[in-house]
Image (cartoon, rainbow, N blue to C red):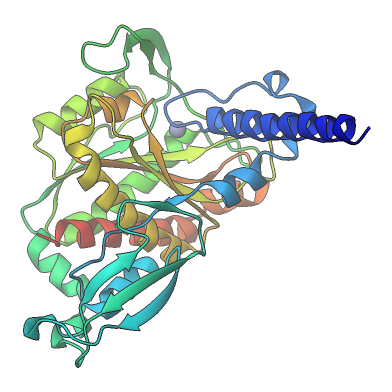
Length: 351
Ligand SMILES: [Zn+2]
């Protein structure tokens, strides 16, 4: 009797876990970077109400490596996702005042949002350079850098196949039209170009050379070709601008995608992640958008063909009536552009 009941609970538990996994994969499949929204008919009714919650809460975040950083800077970097606990070491090398000696969990580990990262730091007084205004430093050293901006999608989709990455037998559609604003009716390809132009103005004002993948809607440029434009330009960053759509109209918020490590993206993974982190933090701060975090993607042609660091901002959900209305407004686009540009300048200025 007892063991029967236990078996039943075990079975119920397994089914439950299975549902969460299915819900998570359905939600991931609905992200519209490069692809058309999945028709509502493909989403089982029982799953629609659980799509957003498990994704937002359960996706772990990569812990940044802050060993060797000044303590205050390390805390600022970690504060986006984690709770920081300080521990002062009894002794440390003379030149290590207030820098992080070790961290737990270590850099690169995956941890839940809001979890504690313990920083063991050297004793001593705060080094002077912590108070340096980062924006000014960034602007000075980003002059002469090249950023290629890809305003996602185009008016007419091109459903012919192209390889998922160089030499791949797996293919994806060359380029799609993207999603459409549920209340405004604005196509994603119009929004992405509007926002991209605003980012371009700000970067150019800071002395960055900007190359636009497209400046018109009636073009035919596949996702692989967009990446190749960035490669040809020798871009310091290939910045991709998109918006999301989902059959669950309650979903909203901003996420930033970067290339997962695969056979093509190994050389650009670390730099892309570094760019994604600073761009994401800056645009969340400037826009006040709901933070959907960073997401590593190995299935995006535009990443897999890129030989330069790349990240993709999914600026919000055009399938959410409220966010759709925000996304088309000049004021909100300016907030988004200010954050994206500030993040890019910070990234470019770091070396
Ligand atoms: Zn898109």
